[in-house]
Image 1 (spheres, one colour):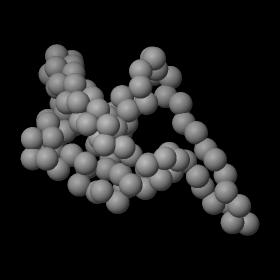
Image 2: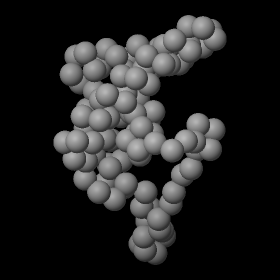
Image 3: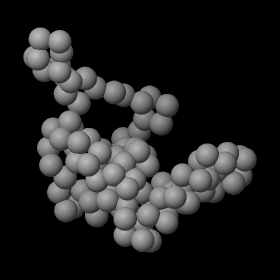
Length: 103
């Protein structure tokens, strides 16, 4: 992510989430973030502009697959562990994938 400082110079900032860290393609993490840009293609594009490279067709296809798996996992976990927020996010993602409005 690139941020602008007060003197208009660029500053690169990174974020590492160690809670669920594992060796996976980066697109797996993007699936977990995707709820943020649902229905907002401008935010999707802004995220990847900050990421530093454009989204490829392969990224988009893989992201849809990873999002479906993450949604199903979230629904199962949310239901089993009485986590309505996780359950709702999973259902929202599946609805967006089915309606072809995910990205």
